[in-house]
Image (tube, rainbow, N blue to C red):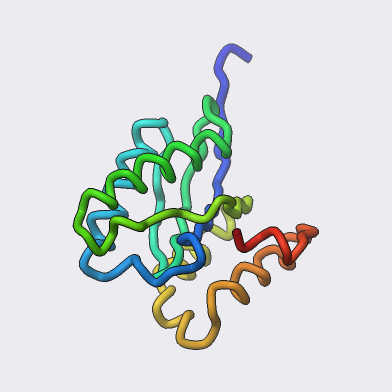
Length: 150
């Protein structure tokens, strides 16, 4: 085959360090736009970004030329520096050390988009830690509770 083609859909979840509720409505739209630009520069198309005060969800098409870890490191590093410059209330902003990345089938794309769009409603009933545990369990990922919250 002369051409390399792929359609790798990922649902990436990243929390703020210590799950601090620092992603305010004041900064959300601009932060999501900035992150979208980072993904675009890596040839990854963002399908949906959403989240809550202490974490974000990014649904993206992964470029065949970058690894998941390199993509996440790129957006976390750049967006952390960017947000710290947005005002004194963001000077202590950090992302958690780790992340979650989950495969999404094309047939499940719209339900994941809907899930991300409804984060504020969703988090009236469940906190981030329980939400993340449910993703790990659903995807049958073995984890150690002592290490996922750094």
